[in-house]
Length: 396
Image (cartoon, rainbow, N blue to C red; front, side):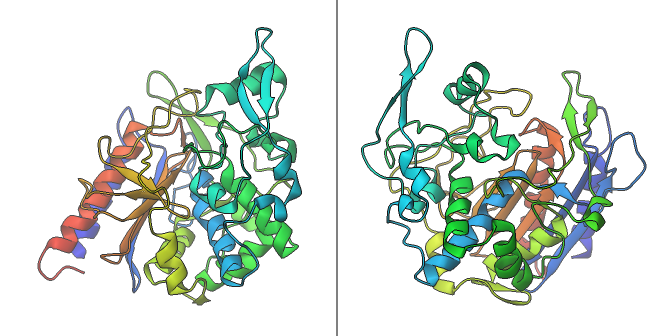
């Protein structure tokens, strides 16, 4: 893999150079046995001098989702959580939510009871009816015109959003995993961070991932950056919440690329982490299957342009969802086969998990808006280079 290392080192150097550069990036690739590549380039803050390293701490946003889903799957294995039972069995407040049927002439939301109960499976699959203000104009209207707190506040009130459609009757990317995290807490009798630390991070060997970064983690934290209209980068002084009311299973973790690649390797190894078993092989296989039937997912709209561009991986290629990952249902141009798992985080973090070939990778930057062209293309080039190296005789 010497040639791959040279290729990827050069790629990272290009990504952090030029007028549309990323401030800093870390990228790791792994097979089932261990790390194939580990590299980083650039700076933790564009106007600073601390280098971005593989152990730089990032806000990992929605790459949190698969981690929280793992804890839910563990409770399923133990018979403590029925994915198809009403989620209100475990968390009564979710049974109080209604469906948003638009707004009346005065601009007030019209609400009605849902036709059926939300289940935890729906929360994991994004078929529950929840969305995000970032991607849904009706939710954004509730925040801007009706005083709803934004989900970034990590308050319980922020997640008491109405459903956008009757549970099970659509697909919309949203806060379902935050609610799933609250279901886990209700069953486990502990905060989600404590559950994950004991049941996921420890057996995976993840030592620098948490909802509230430790003082040691803070010394390695990268700054978020905003891409301006002219392509330049502005550092954002956004401090982690010291004690968030909600440990957001949908996007609240801070962590490192070196930690996340261990989580990816656990999925490659049928649930066996570097330091112990996390999930049973049959649970991993179940989670990795399409859970949407004939339904397919589409692009996420850019409702808040400062936070996201319109986002769709491999436009034109059919994609579904598992528990809780995007699944490409046809081979991707990078070399990723049909049936692979993947997702991303708002600040341009990306990963893929190819269980067929036993390879995966993680790409970490800290830039808004989501789907930044430099960051996304860098990730896709990174993935492509890994597959090309694997295809060469004697590789890996």
